Length: 99
Image 1 (tube, rainbow, N blue to C red):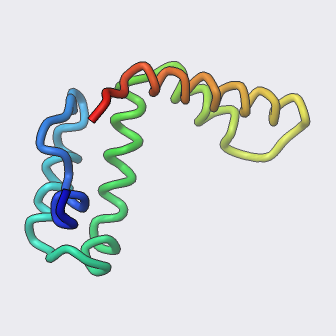
Image 2 (image 1 turned 60 degrees about the horizontal axis):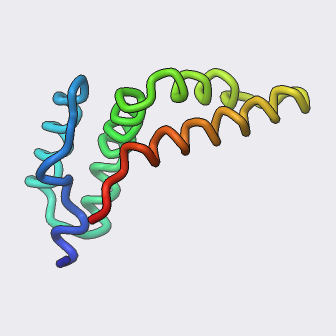
């Protein structure tokens, strides 16, 4: 895989509900040459698309992490946050495919 392929959005991905962010990130990658300037310029779109895709793939688990891990708290809340993160990780692993 070339550096340009590694730094570009995937050509095939299920983006249901995240189309606008995907198009914006693709356009950002098209306009700015690969390298640190692209990474800096497209970072917010990349993060937003990632969050959108995670929320589409695992909505309940994503919501749980967002609500339970948004701030510090009691030992109970920290344990609940860790459990929510683990549940999200398991959910996302179900959606992964081998390259």
